[in-house]
Each structure stands twice: as structure tokens, then as C-alpha cells.
Figure 1: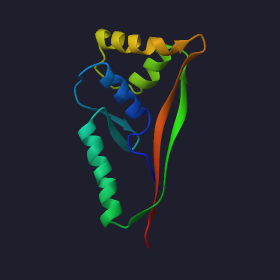
Figure 2 (figure 1 turned 120 degrees about the vertical axis):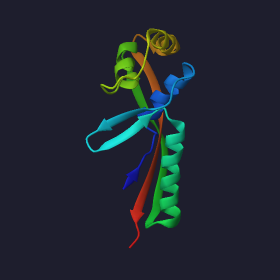
Figure 3 (figure 1 turned 135 degrees about the horizontal axis):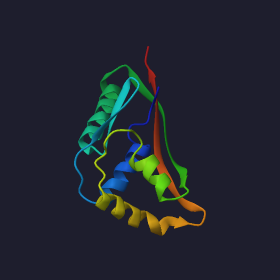
Figure 4 (figure 1 turned 60 degrees about the horizontal axis):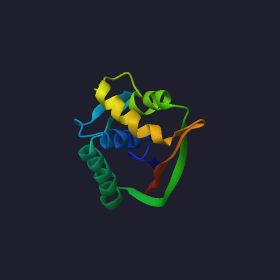
Length: 130
């Protein structure tokens, strides 16, 4: 089992949105039988606490942990907007003012080759104890 809670594009999106200003709580996203929330720090902390409890009390043992930076590139702001700010068909409550603020923050990072960032990743390998 690999647990990578909220260290993927979801946290990247949350960071991008939080840097743009004070925003409402998380948005539920459903994919098949999974669901998660974007931008809800309390829920993220709660999920991390559940993993920590499972390690402390439950049948799980952490056998490895890795942190690394994953390169990510966007050809322009439109691609960033589609992939990071609107990854689903849900209403993310992004108005024109918010989109302009995020675009302004994104612009200094954009070159003729696009914008390159690194995404911090955290992977914990858990194994069920017998």
C-alpha cells in the first residue's frame, strides 16, 4: 500500500489558490469509488492523523518513506488553469478576479518554453502486519 495523502496536484492546487487570497473551504472531488477534497487543511490534517493512528495502533507498519521533487511543466497559463485549477467538472468557484490574481502570480514563471516547477512528493510505503 502506498499512501501519498495530499502531496500531489491537490496540494499544489491548494497552495496556488491559497496564495491568491483567502478562499472558502475544500471542494469535494469524486473519481470512481474514491473522493477527496481540495484546499481543506482541516480535512487533510484529519486524514494524515488517521494514517498516523493506523501506524501506531493498527495492523500497519511503515517500511519506507521517501520525499522527492517531481518536475512539472505547463506550456502556458491556460494549461495550468485546466490541469491545476479545474481538474474536474465540479464548480470550483473560481471567479474572474481570482483567475486574474493566479494568472498574475503565474506569469513571472513563464518563459518561451513554458513554466517549470517542482512538486514536492511524499510517499509512505505501508505493509500490513501479519
